[in-house]
Length: 319
Ligand SMILES: CNCC(=O)c1nnc(C(C)(C)C)o1
Image 1 (tube, helix red, strand yellow):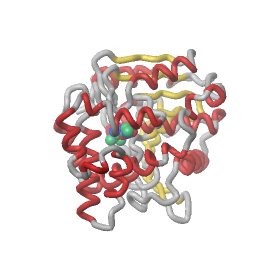
Image 2 (cartoon, protein in one colour; image 1 turned 90 degrees about the vertical axis):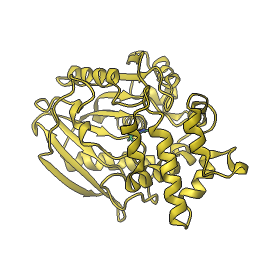
Image 3 (cartoon, protein in one colour; image 1 turned 60 degrees about the horizontal axis):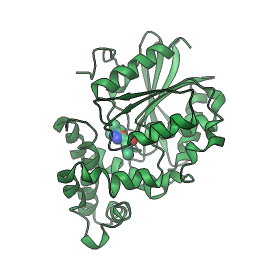
Image 4 (cartoon, helix red, strand yellow; image 1 turned 120 degrees about the horizontal axis):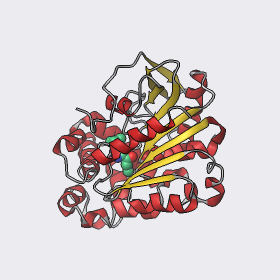
């Protein structure tokens, strides 16, 4: 079932296709809802997480032309979990290629977690192509954010899951978990790679909701999902998103997009992308509408978060 009564019923795409964006990469995308409606592009998280069919339900299908696409190496895009030619700026260029392929002038942009990072990077690169931004669980890949979730922070709140996360890593390497996981996720040994990928994914899935949800955590047990999610996330994080530390929050970058209508929905108890980053974004971008949900964690599937996201898409539908 869906995460809140305000969400729209599950629908199927009226078109699914692929777009070749480089000699190496081909993206999967799909269109649903009203083909003459207001175009909105859904930017999935991870990176490497891929889209989920339920993601269509954040949008009124009578008002929106709903565009879901799997970023490089994620979901149904190929080559699966490929790290070559896979950077933030390749994905920004891909969004422009997709927009042009679909003959869209301007579109609404909706994204959570890594999806909020890429949405902001895209808007700062192409502000004239963005009608509105609806963002959840703000993530800007600062070293402090990565340290909190992967080294010394969330570990204090989820000690049991943290024990499982560090288990595959030799004690001598635990002082730099992202680097240590990079070695295992890129090992020549398949079993080392998949064990590390599942442990990495399970850490995130078991800390993404205020009430740990076993059904949600199960997602980490899929070899295909875990492999792409873990390898691509780790690749982006070890490169701190291919950006300067804090680049997205710089005044010169925010000033490019301050005129764009923007709603941010942030869980108070989000331990994956803690509220401090959403708050920093609000301080540098006072015009944005910030909602901190008092009883939610990171996931867009938290009841309070899902409701405010749908309220946001309903509000922006007629912009
Ligand atoms: C640090 N990564 C957070 C993120 O982007 C994310 N968390 N869960 C997801 C999926 C919903 C795509 C699994 O993405």
